[in-house]
Length: 133
Image 1 (cartoon, one colour):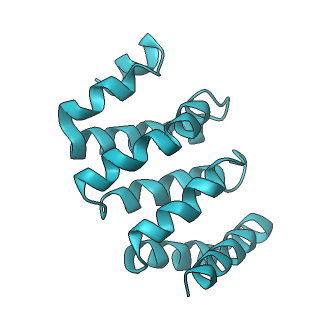
Image 2 (cartoon, rainbow, N blue to C red):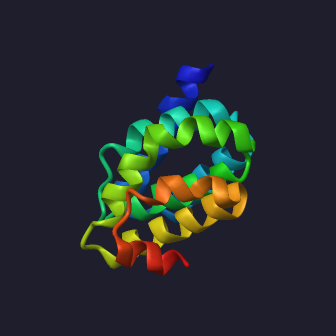
């Protein structure tokens, strides 16, 4: 079943990319709300490695932001180093929409983790850190 989750997620994402399909976007949001968060995080992290800023990038970051709300603090701390490089890279993207979604994602991480998030912020530039304060 976990393989099916990934296949369904990828197909919905492809529909969104091809047609900017709002129904596909809504289905993806529903998956994030109801599917196993640990398994879905694996799928999202894999997809973040190929973020497309023009179409699916902002949506993927928004979905990640929703998903981390469902993860426990410990699970978040354990998985953050796995996908933090992709978030930092996306924060340096020229697309302002994508950078805004990444900033909101970092804010949500900080809201959940508090000061435990501070060491991870060192990967950001001083200007980016200032945006988060």
